[in-house]
Structures are given as C-alpha cells and as structure tokens.
Amino acid sequence: MLVAHLFLAVLVLLDCDENHSEPDQLYGPTPISDYLLGDFEPARHPSFVNVSELGIRTMGRTIYLRAEAAEALTRLIAAFHSDHPDVDLWLVSGTRNFAAQQSIWDGKWSGQRPVEGQRLNQSVPDPRQRALKILEYSSMPGTSRHHWGTDFDINLLQNDYYRRGPGLEIYEWLVENAPAFGFCQPYTSGRSGGYQEERWHWSFLPLSRIYLQDWNDRVAADYPGRHRFAGVDAAADLAPVYVNTINSDCQ
Image (cartoon, rainbow, N blue to C red; front, side, top):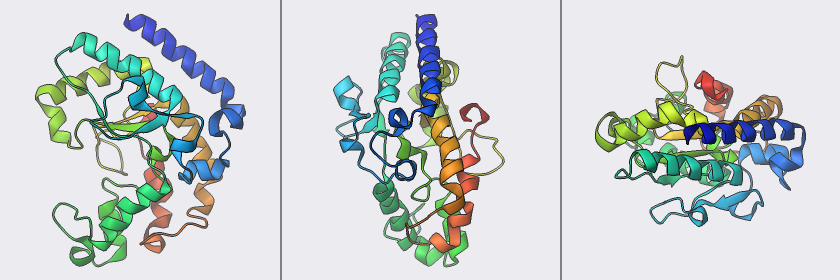
C-alpha cells in the first residue's frame, strides 16, 4: 500500500514541477508577492480547501490548506491510522495569512501574549534581542511558511510530546513515511540557526519548495516592502536567514 502512495506522491511532485512555469496554477488570482507574503484570504482563494470537508480532524478549528496538500494529507492520515488505529492525529493549524501572523508577533512583542511566562516588553527591552526571542518559535509576518497553504501543525506544539507515548509513535512514523506522501519536517534539530526544532510542523514539499524559491527571488531583497509591524526595523534583515535555515530535505 505504501508503494502505491509513493507512486502518487511522485506523480504530484512531477505535476507541480510542470506547473512551476504557470503562475496561475501556483498563485491563482492573487499577485505573486502578495501570496508569498500571506497578504490574501485563504477562505476566498480558489486553490484552498477547508480540510474538515475532506475528513481531516481539526478539533473544531477552521483550517485551510492548498487542495493539493490537503489531498495528500488525507492519504497520509489514512496510512498512519492503518498502522496505528488507536492513535489520534489531528491538525491544530494550517494556513495563516499576514494579518494572523502579525497578531501573533505583535502580541508577543507588546507583552500581551506572554512567552514562557514572560512579558517580553518588560523582560527583554532591547528590540533586537526581543525579536530574536520571538523568532525562536514564531515567524515575522510575511516570512512564515504557513502563508503558503503548504504547512501545518499537528496535535501539540511541544517537542516533549513527541518523545514518548502516542506522540513518539506519530513522530517516528512521520519521519519514516511522510516523504512518501510529499511531506517533510522543515525545522529539525541540528541546523546551524533559525527557528528551534518543531516536531509538530510539516510541509508539503512539491509546492513549498517552489514558494521558497520564489520568496527568495521576489520578496527577500525588498522585505518587508510596504508592510509594517512591531519591531520591523530591528528584525527585518533577519528574514532571509530564518526563511532559509531549514532541513535540507525541505529545500
């Protein structure tokens, strides 16, 4: 059965490569730079689907992904449950646009959203150091892979959960089998910098690697462009480092 899924994943990869020269297939009606920065509404974009409508569990959340990613994810989940029928697997996050990411970032910057129990506006007054603290696990708006509709978070946003019990079963299975469905883990341990390890974060490689290339070609030099957010002057130059310091399997 896994061989069949691997064959399907290869077909999707080839199809996405063929469409790399077709912006309409990749971006639809959204201007390319706006899409890459997350400056659009996924619920209104024709290439996105509400994953609950495909039977993917979201614990009541409304989560959107690219249709290609969501369809591959349904196959992955079916294969996982075939091997682990008693272990639950669900999504807690999918596409986040610029505004949603800015809400997270600004909340942490202002102290309204504590980080490890600390209000960073008080505990880290230096703007550069505050940005670096937030960047351990949260992206600046316009730099998140979640903007692209290819990336999602599962179950719990805690690495320790994936080191024992059901979480370990999920993680070990994904490490071994997710590539056959087109998925990779962007933020592994042992990288030279960038975000901390995130065992819960997975990406649909056939599309995300194209968007990564286009982000570097079209966004990096002018980031953040017309967009402003708290701490932008202290952190904007870090954007290409955090966007690109990922697991080599996701490049």
